[in-house]
Image (cartoon, rainbow, N blue to C red):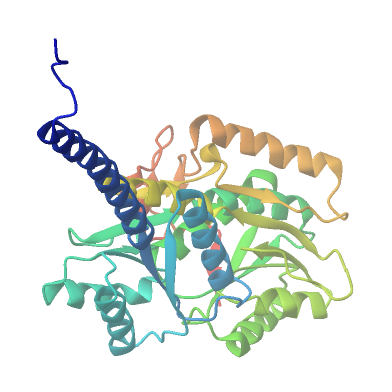
Length: 370
């Protein structure tokens, strides 16, 4: 009997066609996989970053640039940076439009001064999300964020109250906004925990970045009896002035690199911006944002670190105890608190809510203005 499948030409043609089909399928699968891999590389998530200064400017700009880059690396995201963007709306809006044209649907703009440019961009029809360090940032396309800096300022106040000899502590402030208001008040409340008669002397500069004016403000505060200086500015001019004139000071954002190692910098208010940005970027990858990003001591995003050798162990332990208390309840603004006009703002036994803190516009009794 002849074999059923023998070697008939039609059978051989069938085998050949089947084999070609199998190899074709494998080839197609390989080609699709390779295409998908190439597409994945080309479409790696990317975001834009807008800075008004340089990426290596000591203080605010470097802290935020480093924070974004660290968080982006951990999340597998590329960052497209446009720096040296000025605060005028035309410059800021042009930078944002450039990033949008490059295909970015999310950018981080690291100053509240960019908020009006973002508003205009959205009014013109942009659907790009813009993260702003402004907790009351309006609009459905704005992503508000910050660290609970006031907690770190409270801890700095605890230390300043322990270290001051005059009871008069100087504070160089930028502008009158809720963030500065929270920091000044928290610093005063901390100082009065350890020095009940302490006063915080505040000199407003009217700008986030004016080193000459900041140094002049620091000098005025010292002339009025301040023996410790603190600041809420984007530069390190106040720290440089204090270090050069033998005045104790508190570091803001990063330690001032004293060329003489004076130890006058009592401690550094630590802000882990990378933690804020990582939370934000992981949500971006999920396709949704929270209504607000605002973390602090309880998330290890804020603290007081880098103590000077001048700070004894008892003072360090007092700060540590207060930091632990903040980890447990996060509360700084507990009543009773009166404002500078003697009006009761927070009743005894009450705590100021986050909603009230976001819009804070009054200063606590004990804050004096130059």
